Image (cartoon, rainbow, N blue to C red; front, side, top):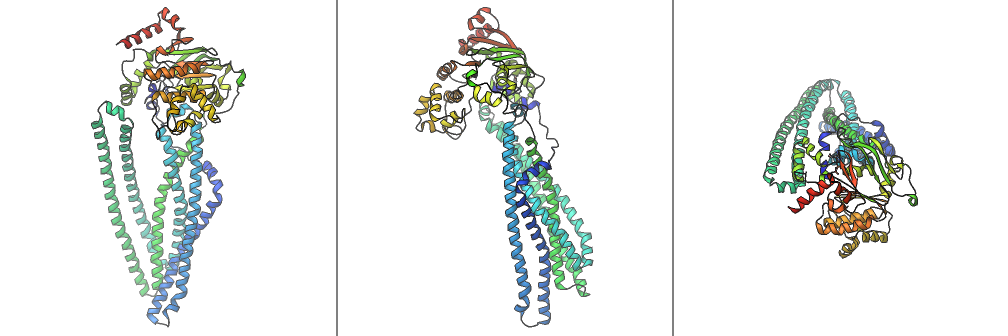
Length: 635
Ligand code: ADP
């Protein structure tokens, strides 16, 4: 059952956050369809950058006109100014146009690439084996779909737009600086890189601080998330105060870190303002002396000032972009990692047995199995079991017995605190659910084979086995946040409304569904009506029955229910069982006494098999389990 795996599998296999490789080839596949828009963006951004280089020069011309007018007063000011001013205005307009253009193109490329990435990643996640999800936390996987794609997209857009612009502008403006005044440029070449370098250094230090602070915020959120997500356990142990303390500690830490980050940014801003202003002052000072010796016009000085500011800004943004690019590449690598991953068990492909000749016989032959996340623990050892067609076979084992000394919340809590504690769990989970998981082909056995009507299920089409042959009902039915109708139809997407109603009737669910004001259109799940455990279970049964499966697997289907709902559900199950091969994974022994065959699973294999009365009279483990359960019931 679910609790056997709680918190233990992931504790043992830590997915290493190792160096993932970024594949340019995969990126190219995503970019190819958007190539035209991307080229458009590049050309437009380049144009905008070139104009940005021109503008300082033209500003200089304008200033020269003004200066000359001041000196000489030659006729009409407006006439003098008109031509350079209009030209400058046109450049401004064009520059704005190109900027809008490249941003439009680029956001189109970015959004479409991101959407394609999300779709493909989602598809490849869904294709993965169950073992993959044992080894990876859902939260992290979902994060790749959201945060990582987002990060990649913004880095991609930023690097292309800003990067292109900054590099073009740095180069171009340097050329114009040189053309205006080689001497002043020489001075700049010495001073500027030192300043930008120092700025970049402090910047990277600040970014590291900011990253640490963010991690700390995430850590605090994790504490809150865990407490709120497991609020029942927290309450059951009256741990509110302790959780509050733990949260407060983390929040205070993140507060302190963010404060020092704030101070760091403040000092950096103050310093860089002083430095930048001093550069302007220095340029005017040096330029002034050149002007005195007639080597420089006032306009040139103006152009020089603006162009050198552009260089400064561009170089600073290149250094920031570099960090952004590194982050984008690692986010991209995380997105791409699973795109390349091929599941070991394919979703589709393989043989099918025509419906009318399928008899529904299952044989497990000498199956040995250990979960990929825990290769050392053999759950099944030379396990053999035959499910005769049309018969009901139940598997029982220790977990139903009185041996379970510790209740679930405590085991799960202890499992969380001490991963090795999971050892205690092992004793009580002999592997019954594992048998069902192997039949569904969620995993493949290490050795041995499983046969369906004499054919190795590895040669059969998994989507057919899961979709049409086996109806699987487990302890905690999952309903999706849509209508009852759609939830039942999940079992067979092409089913008509009347098929859905027939399945619901068979599952003892029709009456309570029609009692809802909106009947089959009632929305259930998190955002909808809350159903009782028994009602959910009956919808899950209808969902399994609508496939008209030849084999029904009931994994402790009634163990979570109270006696009354158990009776109704059991009733539905009994009806559903007729004419099908049924495998019951039993928790409560009372529900399986009528099974055609009861098998006791112990030590990874079947140690006893027979009918209820056979086994009782044999006085073995089953009789022992029954005695213990009765004793418990009487207490
Ligand atoms: P049962 O159904 O008899 O209670 P299970 O088949 O659920 O037992 O589990 C058998 C053993 O396999 C347990 O030790 C459990 O911890 C381990 N196990 C179950 N599921 C997984 C999984 N997904 N990954 C790793 N180990 C698992």
